[in-house]
Amino acid sequence: MVPSYQELINKSFGHMQALGKDKPDMMGKFQAFEHAASAAGSALDAKTKQLIALALSVGARCDACIGFHTKQLVGMGMTRAELEDMLGVCIVMGGGPSLMYATGALAAYEEFGGEKAAA
Image (cartoon, rainbow, N blue to C red):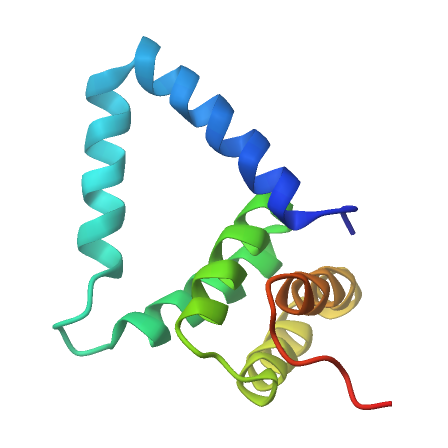
């Protein structure tokens, strides 16, 4: 688990901006693809698509992705119950390593203002 998901996101965005300056065509196309894939208006709403993205982030063991998608989901009103249900599926499918990254997603959720665990 990382010390701060916001710091990790900021650092990652800085690197992506640098890559965008060096490879504007590639990064522009990637961003357009990402926006098209995650937009609402098709069979799945934007929140469901972000939940899928977070699940894949846990499975891929990508801390920066966990931070980014969790922050997006907190902004969309994801509840702790929704997060924990999705993380349960991740753990079943990915075993122990996914369990460890699921705890990171919970930490990111709380860091970005999601409800804290019951005492």
